Length: 139
Image 1 (cartoon, rainbow, N blue to C red):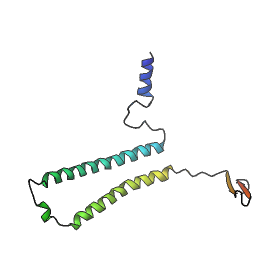
Image 2: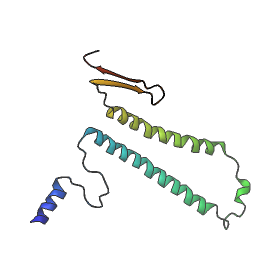
Image 3: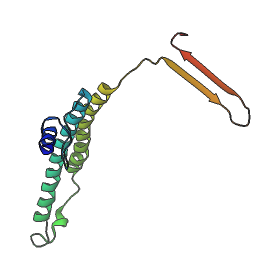
Image 4: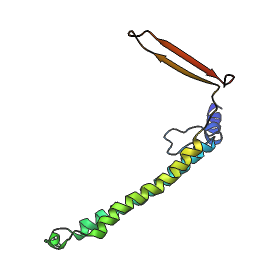
C-alpha cells in the first residue's frame, strides 16, 4: 500500500526523482524562463561540441605525419580563419546574452519600500552615532 502511494507521488505530484536528469515542472513564470534559457544554452553548447569535434577529427585525419609529412610548410596565416574564430564566439555569446538579459529584467521585482534606514557610526574615535529613519508617512 505504501509503495502504491509512493508511486503516485512520484508519477503525478511532480516530486523530485532520485538520479533525475532534468528540472521539476516549474511553479512560476520565472522558473519557466530559466528552464527555457537552460535549453537554449544547451542547444548552442551541443552545436559547439559537435563543431569542435568535427574540426578536431578532420585535422587529426588530414594532417597526420603519414599522409603529409611536411604539411606545415604550405600553411599560411589566414586572415579569414582568424576572423571566423574571433567573430563566431562573439556572435554565440550575443545569442546567449539577449535571452539572458531579457529574463534578468523580467525577473527583476521593483518594490516600493515602506521604510528606508540610514545608519552611520564611528567607532572609538568620534563616538558619533546617527540614525535616520524615513518612513513612507514622512515623505
